[in-house]
Image (cartoon, one colour):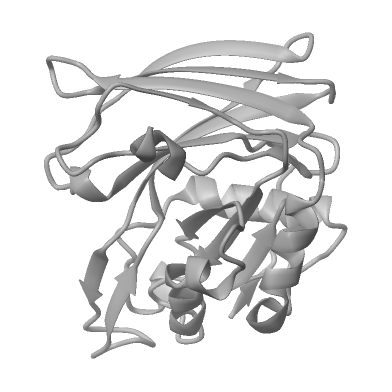
Length: 258
């Protein structure tokens, strides 16, 4: 499936913080010296060709080298909702980001499923993901990120994010993702199919533009009761606004293990 929407926008990838079984605990995470690979999948529950790509993202860590540093995101788009099934995880913001990435890659076609790794489109995702992640992990990081997070007495996620880079212009984004989601699709191209999703972006903040190569931002994010806190992760990322290249990303599991 494909669409031809475009937008002029830019981004930057940086840091992830994972949550323990009891929910979000106080955490302090730092990015490392190597570039972690941001893997973005643009997908839709209304797209019959998307389930294999969804499963690829779900099994991403198993498909890579054991020491691979990777940050996966599943961004559900809403431009296929009209053909019979409304994707409850879709956000129009993701349509816009996908279109901007297509333009940044100097391409013309927006479609699903569509993978971007480190800000670059990867059409041969079935066989090339491992090598692309290796390539990015071998590069020194062009940005640094630090995130502190904890749950307030009111049940919101309070976070402080700091990013530094020599790239100009650059922007910081923050997101909350959830894994272990299941949908029983009753209509549309996937009617009668049960779909499973990991790393689904539930909340999205940005762009937060860096000034003089730095930014410090504090936010509170509401955590709806329907979200499974045992399966949530906090993501922060930084991207070059000129060409969309990812400057740094941090695997949140380090925060859990610390």
